[in-house]
Amino acid sequence: MKRIIAVALGSVILPLALAGAWAGVDVEMEEKDEGRPSNLVSIGGSAQLEEGRTVADMVVIGGSAVARGTVEGDMVVIGGTADVDCPVGKDLVVLGSARLGPKAVIGKDLVVIGGDLDADPLAVVKKDKTVISAGVARRPLFGLWGWVREGLFKARPVAPLLWWTWALGLLFGLLYVLIAAGAPAVVEPCAEALAQRPLTALLAGVLGLSGLAPFAFLLVVSIIGVAAIPLLFFAALATILVGKAAVCFFIGKNLARMGRAPALERPALAAAAGAAALLALLMGPIAGFGVWALTTIFGFGAALLAGVDALKAERALAEAPAPAAPQAAEASAEAALPRAGFWLRLAAIVLDGFAFLVLGAVTHLIALGLGGWAVYQVGMWAWKGTTLGGMIVGIKGLRLDGRPMDVPVALVRHLASYLSALPMFLGFFWAGWDPEKQAWHDKIAGTIVVRVPNNQTSS
Image (cartoon, rainbow, N blue to C red; front, side, top):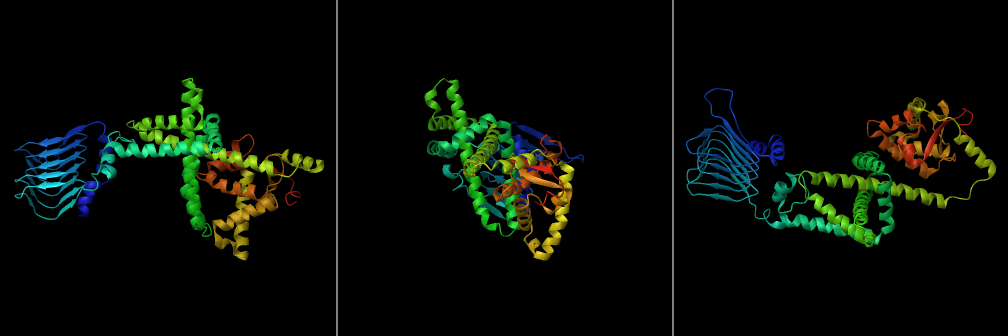
């Protein structure tokens, strides 16, 4: 049975099925030894083995097969109907329906998955016969195999011939419209971020989505963060939904402007028009999955940018009145200090690693792993504006306006550092050539790292 499953779903068959779903390939593969029969292979089309003809193996992917000759080895049919009325020396595996005529003799096992078996009483199966009926799978509501053929093989999430894919698409479109109508103050800033900073939204979407799984892993490793995983899941889901609603609103608003219909620029109507256009694009072969992926990435990134902007605006409103003139002058003076480059910051991180090992051995903080490292980093940046390694090399972290970091800013900066580390630590190297000497996590948190005399780093 393991051999049959490997034949039907192995790493060779599925890539061939995906590759041949659009362009039919019908070839015969000759054996190296002279005198032996060839293999009959058809990809993306049907095949017929005439009476009196003998082949070694017969493989048909994305089409139906009719066998009236002799198959000495295995016969595999993926995504079509197998009509067999001849001897098959070994296994017959069909992902679809099969019919066995009175002359059919299956030398070993017969497996039919996702379809029906119509076998003549005179047909012979010498070993095991396994049939996973399509009774449920063939119902329109649960037509998964139909979606595999009409959707997955053609690289589109919505298959025009399957009504339930239309229903799901319309359901999600209605959800996006409801989000746009019920929370326009949330959706409109996301669409504005997408319009004004598309490349930044793309980068934020790629980093954010690719960082979800590693960040969840870090939470699991830290032990104390396991409880936050459900919160992370629902937050990511909400961000994706809001982002897709913003993309629909953005598309619909631009369509309304192109059609000179200002009445359709309202959030609900624009989102409805955008969702309809998006649904049409998702039905396109090959391009459908690409459109789905891009809109998800852009929407997620735009939602992240809008969220960061909202947090910055809220924090600015909640802050106390401007500090007194001497304090403002001191903050301005520190912000004007020379920026710390990549190598100086790298030296501080290395020294922090040794310091954390020593400190963790004494306080058992190291037992918390990455959680302990986060406590050390956030605590030191918020308390002293630097770390132990930073004190040694003479660097200090500040906000862009020169004010010291608080706990929220230090926490955002630390969490964003994991995003900087994801693409081979590119976000850290960024500080080496950025004009402002900012790493990615500095740009996200709105911070800078400056060089100060050693007698000021502990102040």
